[in-house]
Amino acid sequence: MNSNLGELIRILKGLRAAVGYHELRMPQHAMRCLHGLPLASINAFEPVVEILRRGIIKNKADAASIIEALREAACSVPSPMKDAFNLTLVVCYGMGLTGTVLVF
Image 1: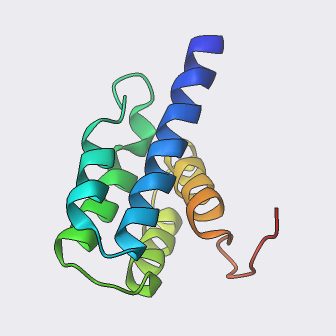
Image 2: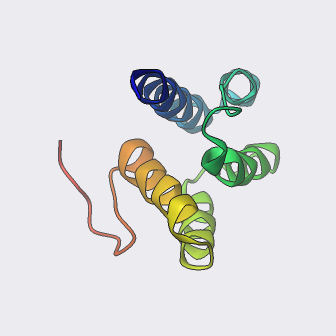
């Protein structure tokens, strides 16, 4: 259980770092963050990482298109993966599926 929690924290930190680099228009650093994620133990994040990779490759400076892609995907996947999408939206962008901004 603790190892999965540790892996989840590493994944979320990596996703957050990748999003930060993307917003700073540093796509190489963002891709490096995504490449090093330990997805083997928690594979529910694989589709999340793919959406982020596609957004970074397209080099879109605004986060709106990536957020919309994450929201659409979250609505069409089963529950364990839906949780991964929701967690990514909250941790990386500070918002839930409804679009309300969450303050930490």
